[in-house]
Amino acid sequence: MNPTGASRQAGRLALWRTFRGYGTLAPMRALWAFVATALVLGSCAQKDWIDRTLVTEDVTGSWYGRIAGPVGTGREIVFDLEQQASIVKGNVRFVGGGVTGGLSANRSQPGAIEGAVAGDVFRFRDPKGNLVGELKISGDEMTGQADIGSGPSPLVLRRVVPSATR
Image (cartoon, rainbow, N blue to C red; front, side, top):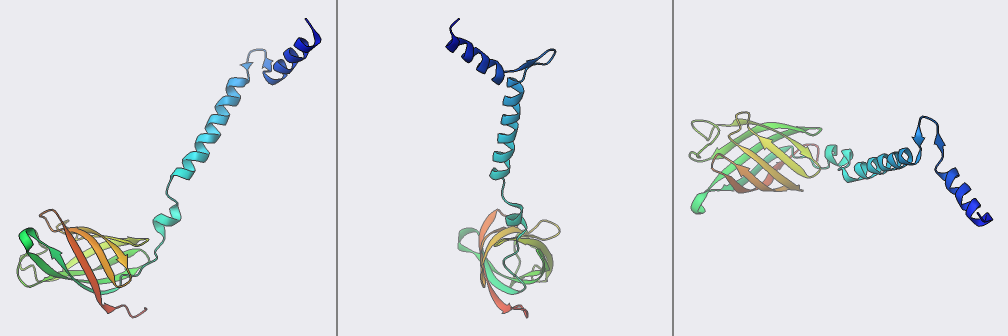
C-alpha cells in the first residue's frame, strides 16, 4: 500500500470511528443532523405565536351594516360590541322583520354574540350557532362573510358609534 492510500484510509477511519459493541457513529451523526434540521425548519414553518395572539384592532362600539340574502334580498344588522384584550362580547340585532335562521322568534330583539380578535380578523358567533362569521377589520369598517343559517353571505359593517377609548 502506498503512503497516499494509507493516509486516506486513516482519515476515513478517523471520520467513521467505531467502538466495540456500538457499531459506527456515522448513522447516529446523520440522525442527529436530520433531527436538528427538522426542528429548525419545523419551527420556521409555523405561524408565529405573536401573530396568533396579537390584537391590533379594537372593535368596541356600534356597527351597522347589511348582510346579503338570497336573490338580492338582505337584512340590516346592528352589532353593539365590547372588547377586552382579544375577547369580544355584545349584542346583535336585525333591523326590521324576520330573518331565516335568525337569533330569536322576533329577530329584531337583541341576541348575545361572542367572538375574538386576532390581528385584523374578528371571528364571532351567537351562543346557539345561528349566526357565525369572520370579518376583516380595517379602521371603522369590517368586511367578510357571515352565515345566518342559509349559507355564507357577504357582510359589510361600518362603525357608527366609536368606542370611548379611541
